[in-house]
Structures are given as C-alpha cells and as structure tokens.
Image 1 (cartoon, rainbow, N blue to C red):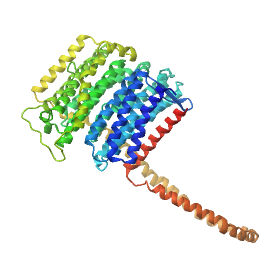
Image 2 (image 1 turned 180 degrees about the horizontal axis):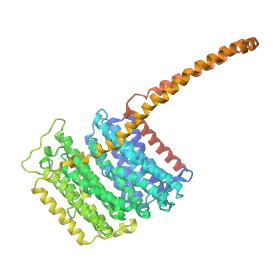
Image 3 (image 1 turned 45 degrees about the horizontal axis):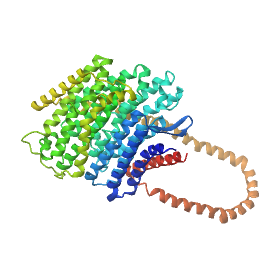
Length: 636
C-alpha cells in the first residue's frame, strides 16, 4: 500500500475510530478537544488525498470489490465535507453541554460515512457508507432522546430516507443481472432493461436523501435536532450527498435517454415549490430547511442536464453558505431561546459579528453578485437553457424565490426599532467558539463563486464535464433579478402563502397514501391470522389427542406384551446407564448450564430497553467493521 492510499484509508478510519471510542467511552470533559483535533487531522488528510488522488480496492464479495477512489469530483467534495465538519465541531464545542462525548462521537462517525460516500467507487462501498450515514443521522436528529417529538422526527427522517434507500439495493441487483458488475463507472454498460432498472433505483435513493419531491417533508422534522447537526447534515453531507450521487452517476442518467430529463424537472419543480415553502415559514430553521431543499434542486437539475462542473460548484458553495446560516440560527437559538422570526427582529444589531456573517450568507443565498451562489446557480441555469427554455424559465422563478426568502431573513434580522429579548432557556450570549467558524464560512460564502467563473470554471469543466462558460448576459439578468427582489423585500412585507406553510401537506399525504394503507393491510392480515389460520391450527391441535387415544388403545392390545418383554431386557441396561448418567453426564450438563447462565447474565447487561442505547451499540459495531476492514486492507 502506498502512502497516498494510506492517507485515503486514514481519512475514513480516523474519524470513525475516534467517533466510536468517544461514543462508547463517554470521556465527557475531553470529548470536544479530541473531536476537534480528529476533525482537523481529517481535514488535512482530505486535502492531501485531493491533491494526490489515490484509489484503493479490497475484495469484498465475488465480483464486487470494496473500492474507494478520489477522482476530480471527490477531490472537490471530500475537503468540503471535512472542512465543514471541522468548523461545526468547533461551534458544537461551545454549545453542546449534555452528553458531549456521545454527540461528538456520532458526528465523527457520520463524517466518516459521508467521506466514504464521497469517495466510493463501487456499490458495496456506497451501500455501506450510505446506510451508516442514514443510521447516524437518526441518532443525531433525535439526539435529545428524552424528547419524544425529537425522537419521532429522527424516526420520520430515517424511515423516509430508508424507504428510498431500497432503490440502491434494486440498483445493485440490476447491475449484477445486467452484467455490468458493481463498479459505479461501469453501470452505463449494463444490458437493457437492467440498466434502466439500476438507474431508476439510484435516482429514487438519491432523491430521498436530497429531500426532493415527494420526499421533502422529512427535512422539516429534522430541524428539531441540535443546530450543529442541521449545519452538517443539511449543508455538506446527508442531503448534499443525494445530489452528489446524481452528479457521480451522470453518465448513467444520460445513457438511458429518460433519467436525465426526469432528474432535471424534479429538481427544478422542487426548487420552485420549496422556494414558496421557504417564503411561507415563520421560523428561521424551517426557512433554511426549505431553502436547502430548493437549492439542492439546482444540483439535481445540473446532474439531469449534464452540467456536472456547475452542479459540483453549486454544491460546494451552498455547503459553506448553508452551514454558515444554520450555525448563525443555532447561535441565536442558544442566546435567545427561540428561532421565531418575529422574536429575531433586530437580532443582528445585538451581535454584530453573527449578524454580518448571517447577512453575507443570506445575500449569497439570494444570488447577489458577486457572492458565491450567484455564479454557481447561473452555471446550472446556462446548461438548463441549452436543454429547454421552459426549464430555464422555471430556474429564473426559483432564483427569484431564493432572493425573496433570503431578503425576508435579512429584513428581519436588521429591522430597526426592534429589540430581541432573551426568552426562557436562552443564555444571552454568543461565545468566541460560536463566532470563529462563522467568519471562515462567511468568507467561503463570499468567494466560492469563483468555481463557476473563468478560468476556474473551464478547468472544472475539463475535469468533471459540463459547461465551462456562462454568458455575461445570463449573469447580468440573474444578478438584476436577485437585487430587485431583495430590495423589494426590504420595503414591502414578505408574502406568506398559507397553503405552503405546512410543507405542501406532504407528510399528511405520505400518511394517507403509504402509512395508513400499510397499517390497514397489517391489521387485515392480523385478523386473517386470528380468524382463519389460528382457528385451523387450534382445530388441528384438538384432533391430535383423539388420534393419540386411538393409538394408545392399539398399543394396549397389541404392543404391550412385546414392550414388557423388551422392558425387562432393557431394565438392567437402564440401571447401568442411570448410574453413568448420575456420575458423568449430569455433572457435565450442570457445568455447562452454569457457564451458559453466566454468559446469559453478561448478555442481559446491555439489554436496557432504551432504543437509543441499542442504536448506539449498532453504530459502534458498524464503526468496528470499518476499522476491521481497513486493517485487513492495510495488511493486504
């Protein structure tokens, strides 16, 4: 194994190992410094592997290797995941007081899963990381497990994304059936119709993780998790990885002739409708959640129209911008004890550093030139225009909505004459650990648009594929729309369409269309079991004694004589066997029973009845699996 391969392996194993140790050992006082140090080292490793671009493969199943590779797309994405993780861990060190070891440990394990997803080159590696990422997201969203609502929100997110994740298993089976193997780069070579089945499976799984329609509602409940969780999961990882996967398999989407168009339109419709949802929200984190779904819609559209470089640039710029905004929301939530927009009026004037950073992020989200998302969004829209003028028009509407909900946030936090009050549970202060990451992320939100502007855009397009140039006219049009809408929002009350406040009723629809029919079917099957199957079994069981009595009568008349003779013969043998049983067999059985009893006592110890503890044990086992595989790969 070369040094570059060792660095790639360490980038994944280091956070997984440290995270598992922290989550299990519960070293509360040292948890935050250890987590920050591990995240910092992981960031260094991510930068190193992005520069040297190694690949690593180990046998996993027959014809299916566990493969990791840092190509151009992963080289852009992996450092982004690592840097955001590092900054979020610093912020969390100043805000997470309860169970910090478990929190930081889960965050590191999640980061390891996201980094593995970003570098996965085969379906086994992708599936392993994808599942671990979903499992840890459930634990993190429901981190405050004594609050039933938070745990329920985590469960909703897990079940919804897990249902969509089944598409990856369908894709894996179709890839094998189609003769393409399990390497992601080889999937376009699968035979028909299996290539189309694999594409559909991956598309569904990616849309579920990216919270695109119709799966968007799970992200609303996920906002009940701690703010650092929202800042990581819904900026650089989890949701972002759904869009990233579609960028990764863009050649597969293009090879089908239909998947690209489906992805493009689903992404753009999501961007428009979720933009309206964001505009209707009255809580800051809910506004940011809906805007996350909308902005990921641009990434999904980029994958659909073949603008991989533009989509990747938008993904990276959005990660910095949205991590910044979620952390500012978390800082204010900690300080004031509320995230209601009406209670945050004028809050930027109270904490200037946080306010300025939030303003940079919000204006970048609005698409104000020259901030980052202005150029990256236009890189996607330029490709959409070449595909369909209607798609481009919808993109302009989505861009205008982005400026509207971002302008609403800016107007709220800088409103004159308002004095936000500290509510119950608020600390009344924002510490240095909370402020420092905001400055770095604000710088990223300001300058990362360079990825979509010449000459960097041409380099990215050559490496990733897509469109390297954005016409100046398109940049001017989009900048003018964004500026006009933001200015309008600063002067007029923001519209709040009531029909969009509840996230389009998607969760209720999911309950009506999926949950209730499934429960109804389950109850019907239970009644069938009770009324038909159970009665049949009971009747059969009742016939057994009758047959037994008949057999007994036959035994009395015919067999007793022979049995008595045989019994006399065996009696002597039986007495000898009894002595052997008493002296040898019983002692052995009693000794074995004692050992089993002691093992049973040990096995009962972790069975506490607390679901979160069972889940933590499962996550730890998965992390140990990662380490074991890594050691095996290193020795190989």
